[in-house]
Length: 621
Image (cartoon, rainbow, N blue to C red; front, side, top):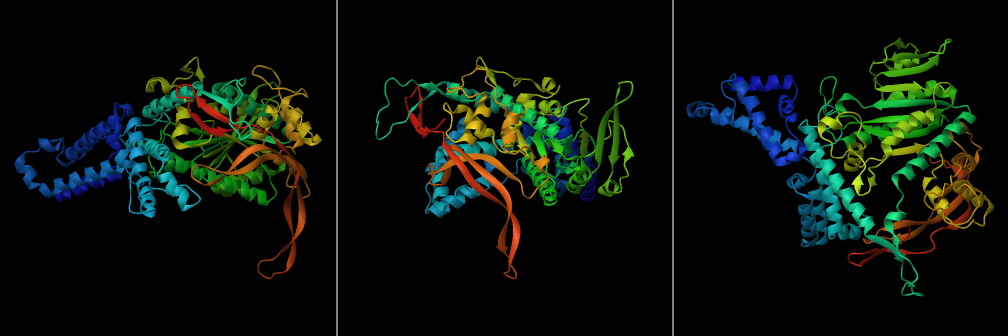
């Protein structure tokens, strides 16, 4: 019997994880809304049936079906089966720290637990901080030990920390159970969709019930009665406004690229098969790591690509957007702007960190006006160095797809807009979520659901979209548009007029139709990094935030944005000393000098809720 047991286990290993067939058996009939406890019980039953059926050639399918005399005879082997099933169940909910103990808790139970943990007494402060680290499985944030201990005594900190880590532990358990995939629940579980919907509704209600009033000061201890309360919901920027701003900058970048005669391409980068929990193609080789760890792996490699090219004086500009596969593994779309002579070096740098096949796609227009798509593939970096591509079909798979954009056929901003749409958060319209949050898995499997992607990014803490290789000025752009009076400094005033779309004073209300000139704005700030080509003597202006040092409730030092800072950056040679021989040498450095500073937040405001009339901490909208 021992030989039969080992043979069954080895046979299951040859086919993949022992639970793979079990996952396929029950995942299509289960839903993540059933709860972790019920799913684990069902998983245990299916796993037990799989192993017992193999051991006894289908004669028995459960432990309680085995006759007592056979059970006594095979006691040791069946004990090993039970231990293996227990280990499999523990591996499903395994997580850092002790989060697995709370994975089945509801939102209300987590709030109660947070209060208990904040009030829990220990013999010393050090013991409480260390116990908190062990529970969460990570370091407690904070610049000092005192601020870490302060967080451990805060119910608000515990509620956020537990909610985040429990939500991720649940998603990871669903991934291990094989319940997320292209033909199952896509991107994220239905359970997380419900939690995100609840979060958005509560957030919406809080904004509807909260107003901004001028904060009390020493000179005026009580706000004047003629001050109107400003509804917070009218101050918060709507998703369509954020999308319009981002699209304006993308369009401006495209115009700047055309002016500098830059090439444009769309990169689609997919991570290796070991990062895919439930792939729709090929054999499952999952390493068990979460989508957040997969995202971190990509970010490190992308930063390495940009760093290596930067050392060779090659700059890139564009937009990067994260999207999930059906099984929650992230993949990346990058709109790339670059100088034509650098194309081969950029491909080589990309293949150094993503080496599994690179496909190059080009669209051409024939003499009779038809569009022809040429596809070629490089199987390795050595083939790319030797410039020996192979012709392939459109459906040929590759880790990196480098699609060159022909401006005579289409525009880069048009491609980027498609992926910008994926950066939109779920919006509310007349009290209802303007998306298909409540779609069942059959409906949600048809096409990409903004609600599911939004929930996915919320659970795993991933940014929606990011511009790169261009001045970081989106926040400063908003500050300039909010300034009701023209700045005194001529250079800042020029940028203020470009951001507001005119020189008229006053507040820009909703629907005013005043559009800023993002093209002229970016051009005044030096244009695209890709166009500068790493010139060492470049001099340019840059807008950044004017910050004020403060402390948060836990005693950590923080920076509050209070205005705008205009600086001039210039690459120049400065005298430095060598580390080894202590001899002076000249090196290139970026020297920054302040041109002007403008304080935009002149008033302090407070949150006031209608229901409780409770004044929250001061803020500056």
